[in-house]
Image (cartoon, rainbow, N blue to C red; front, side, top):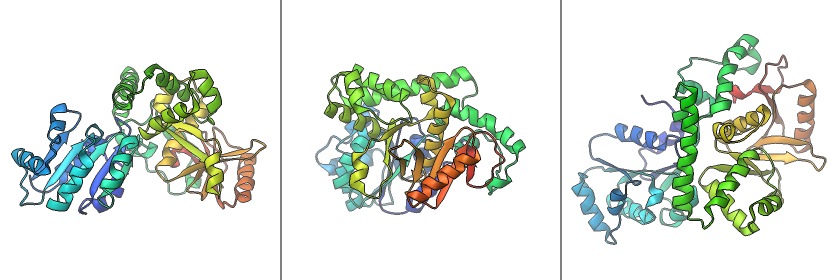
Length: 390
């Protein structure tokens, strides 16, 4: 049974448009499920689905003459005299695809639905040849609201956080604990046994390493990037000490940045930079690193509940826009600034002094909106929210 994802509301306005729809994101986040959802919804039967992880399917696109590819599509049942829909899964395995997609959009008005798990490659491949002919959407592990929907929990939180009672909080908090332990990968959420969830997380990690790092990355020192991944898991929510990482891993700074770029481009990590009104200053300062999913962090790193909670808040905010953090020279900081408009400080439990401190810091850098995100119930009502309300 198909489970609703929030990204559908963003994709829907482009379903009837001529541009190709490209859905990218970490492996096992549900891209193929979305592709099949639109495959079933497209009218008529004049449509074609190909999974490009299958080597045989990739061979259909090896022709230099694109009219021969058209003949192949016709052999597979596509009729170009009618509106035609082509669904291609995991397109990063076929680097020649962008110019082929462009050809069929321009000459035959084919509507393409595409998925790929590596923006590291897709952005380079698609930037020129499909300029103006694609719309890109990023799919991430489930937010907590999606998590509740997948588990078919009929909670309807009041629109105003101040109306949440302690009884409501005690009802929903155990599910947030589950979210912190096992994360938001759909296949993990839908499993009922702890052993199955843990095994699924291990499979996700192994699949990522084998199919993205080893197969697509083509690095000379695979054991080094493996060790780097394990280091980053332990450093979730921390500022990157690139000098120490280079020393610990025995690699140069350019190599370290190459690895970081790959891990971010394949959605395993996300770096966020300090808040600054001057972009040049922003680029120079040290980024903080977060992982794709709190379940993977909890499974493969030894982090306390506070840092896991911060990772979960990151996951629920990143789908809303651009994130930064802010830190003064004294060390006082704001955990997240969303779209350079609203500040969020993450606390397991909140005191009035935490709200006052965040208010002062926010006003100091010109932000009027601010909230402390806490996990435990609080009688405080102003400028306070909960992880499950994001």
